[in-house]
Amino acid sequence: MMACQEWPEPVIRVQALAESGVTTIPERFIKPQFQRATTTNTNTNTNNTSLTFGPNQANCNINIPVIDLQHVYGSDEKMLQETLERVSEACREWGFFQVVNHGVRHELMKRAREVWREFFHLPLEVKEEYANSPLTYEGYGSRLGVKKGAILDWSDYFFLHYMPSSLRDQAKWPSLPTSLRNVIAEYGEEIVKLGGRILEIMSINLGLKEDFLLNAFGGENDLGACLRVNFYPKCPQPDLTLGLSSHSDPGGMTILLPDDNVSGLQIRRGEDWITVKPVPDAFIINIGDQIQVLSNAIYKSIEHRVIVNSNKDRVSLALFYNPRSDLLIQPAKELVTEDRPPLYPPMTFDEYRLYIRTKGPSGKAQVESLTSKCDSN
Image 1 (tube, rainbow, N blue to C red):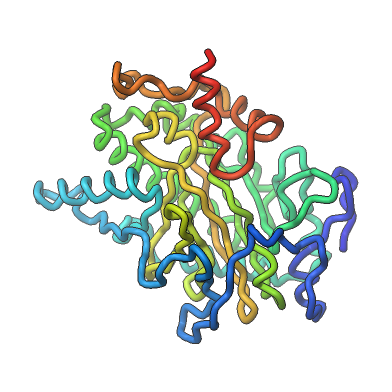
Image 2 (image 1 turned 60 degrees about the vertical axis):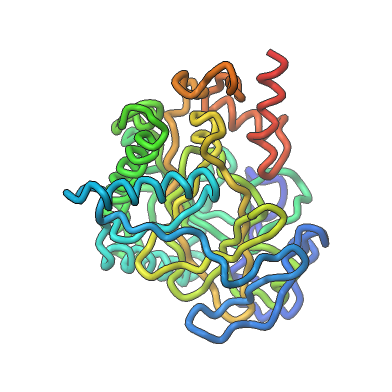
C-alpha cells in the first residue's frame, strides 16, 4: 500500500496486493451484488479465463464481428463494398468489432505487449517513480477516481499522452525496459494511422465526406490520443470484483490490443453480457460517446466491463482516439432531419468530461442523459 499525497486516501497497488498471497480480497474491491459477473467453470484452453455466464449472461458461442480490412484499399470493388457494409453494421448494431489485416505489423503488436508486461514486473519501487496524480492521471496508477471510500477495480495501469505532440513527453514514459520508449513511439504512430483509416470508413458509411470525422476531431495533427496500458493481476475471488467497472468510453473511439492468452473484456448486448474472444493478431475497435454524438446515435457507444481471472494475469493496451478537447462536438448537420432531429446539444470534449464527472450518471447512461439536455434547450 503506497500513499500519494494528491489522492484522498492511500493508494493500493493491486499487483503488489495480489502477489502478497492474499486469499481473500479487501472489502474495498468487493462490488455490489448486482454489478458482479457470475462465474462458471474455468476454461482450460489457451484462452484460459474464468468466463462468466450467469443470469443474463450471453451464450459463449457469440462473439463480436470480425472484419478483414485487406480489401479496403484494394481494387476489388465488390469486396470493398462488402467490407464497408460489415463495418457499418458493426457500428450500428454492436458498437464493437475486431479487425484483422489492419496494416500494423504483428511483431510490433507482440513487442508492445511484451515491454509493458516487463514494466509491470519490475520492482515496485521502480514503478513508483512514475506514480501518477489525479491532476492528469499520466503515469503509473491504480485508481481512476478521487471519491473517498470508492469501491475499487482490480487493476493497475499506466497512462500517457501521445497526441497532440505538444502533450507528448517521453520523459514521463518508463525508461525501463530500455526498449519501451522506442517501441511505444512506433506503436503509437501506427495505431493513430489505423484510427485515421477507420474514421474514413465510418465517415463514408455515414454518407459524409471521408475526412469528416477526422476533421471533427481536429485533423491529423490536433486530434487527441492517449494510451492506457492495463494490468489485471490474478485475483483469488474473481466473482466478487471487476478489473474495470461497467462504463462506456467518453472519447471518440478506442483501439484495444487485447491479451493474446486470456479473455476478459465483456460487452453489454441487450440484457446480456458477452465475453469477447480475441482473434489472433486482431485489434478490438469500439465506438465512444463522441462518435455516437457526431453520428446522431446512428453509431452506438456500448457499455462494457472487464472480468478478472484466478489463474492468470492480463495485459491490454487501449489507445483512446479523441477529439481535440476544445472543439464543439454535435450531430453532423447532414445526419439531422425533420424525422431525426439533433439528439445531443453542442459540447466540447472538455465540457463533456466535466459533465460526466460532476453531473452525469455513471455507465452507459452518461451519453444518453444528454438527450434530455437537448430536449430542454
